[in-house]
Amino acid sequence: MTKWQSKLIRQLLLFYREYYKKCVSKKFNNFKLATWKRKTLISRASR
Image (cartoon, rainbow, N blue to C red):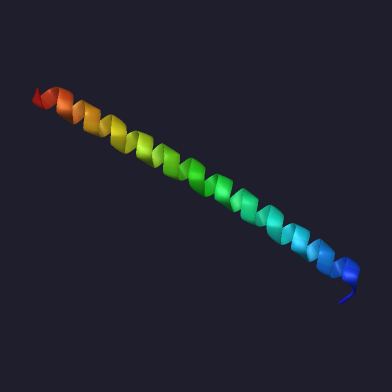
């Protein structure tokens, strides 16, 4: 493996990691938002 190839692979790995983090955080935020909405609805209903 040449230096150029290893450089390319490192770049790809970094890119994938960032992309993965973005996707996961987005899903997680959506999930948090959904649970928060449900909680507020439940608290309003119980009032």
